[in-house]
Image (cartoon, rainbow over the protein chains, first blue to last red):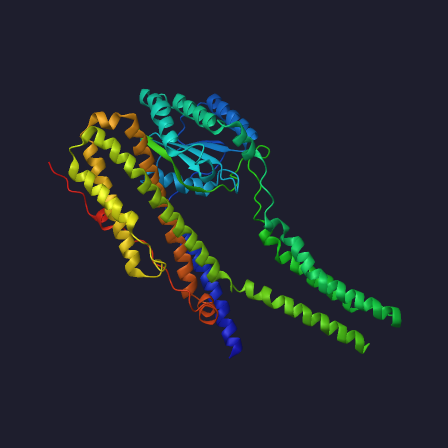
Length: 266
Length: 202
């Protein structure tokens, strides 16, 4: 009876895993572009030199304030509103550092003639919607209306950077590394957790050994269970995400977005 | 020798005592309260964004009045809807009480409707539309509406997570065993106004 129960439970877990994978595959009705770098020119509107120029300036910004800006042009919004597309893309890429949430996405959809600045939660104070809206209305759209997309993107990025770097003291505070989170200490806490009974056991054995002079075989068990326990807790260690922008590759640092920013059309 | 075996069994007992809570955590005994807190956190974000919208409205009204004071009907509609929304006392059990949740949604929905009509009226006043003050307010309002949409989506997601945990095994067992007070929460439905097909007149 009991075995039957466990067999059922196992089957259930299996079915659940398969179903979960299937539904998550189905849910992906929107195809999001891959984060290939700081400039993802899916619509192919930037020349290689302009792209290089943008990448360098965005890289410098991250070096200075740790803020991540990504420029993305898309050939199609796939029927979604640019706000909807933007938040999905931003959350998928996780631009910005974890905990600081300092990512900005400039999205240009030349076919739909829509543009959006998506602002990470941590930057909503320095780049509020009204300011993002102004940058779009005053700097980006006039160039876009002339048909000069490259110029509009450059001017927009220039202004976004200027507003992010506006307050020197605030930038310095933002660029600092965040405090280590409790998760990164978990293995150590865990170590201590096992250490108490272990020490107790070994010291009591030692006391015996002094009397009997025999080497205990039971000690072997302890390092075994020890190691397993640590393996088990390696998972939460993954919470500390590596900051993006190391070396040549670029990746989001785990920043979160709450729908801040502004959009425009031309 | 017997002493050593006793020590060893003491040690193993201690290990078991330490392992049981770990095992329970692994089986998801904490899932229900964790998801519940997440859902509540997303809910307070929803409230925050609605509040933010309410805070923007007086400025908007003032600006529109400056150019189109005679559009009294739409203006008072917005003011009244906002008054209702801000004076609505949110009951403590709103998340688990379908009636009060429905009421909350209706009140905010009628404010959305009134705002939409106001913005439609504004289209008739090019001067107002191009005034910097109005443009800024419009951007803020759009931004807030977008945040409301995002916050609502996040709330729906986390409630889905929580409700599913309550209804599926092993969460169902944990609920009956440890958290009998945890009730499933309500989610937003699409507002009636949004499902209406707009009328097109030629």
